[in-house]
Image 1: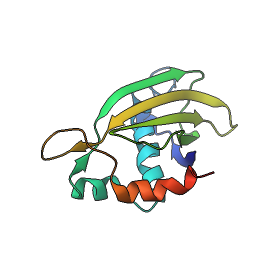
Image 2 (image 1 turned 120 degrees about the vertical axis):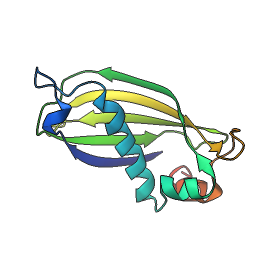
Image 3 (image 1 turned 90 degrees about the vertical axis):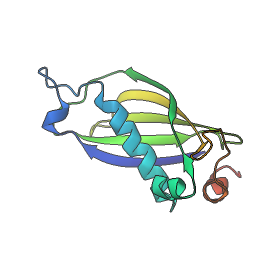
Length: 137
């Protein structure tokens, strides 16, 4: 299993009139978690796109358990429970506040797509090689 954490501070513009993070902002929080988790491996989305592979989101789910508020430092935990063996990758994500209370859980599914043909493809071998050690137990 691969797991990574990144921090995000809630900005004023991300909250609504009730001083709660607007639910649509979690899509961006999850994206930051995913991109930073891949970056931590020494690979980036930009690297993947240069290789001719793009990753559209095909599913996005979130369950809001508790609100996040302005100026809170959030921890976005990104988890890969399985090493992808085809065109599909599934990220599980959790958002915690500074008191380590679980605020939101989610799941995001993306496909590896050949940018030129728009057809499904497998995960780039360089990314697979970086993830493999986390799944060899």
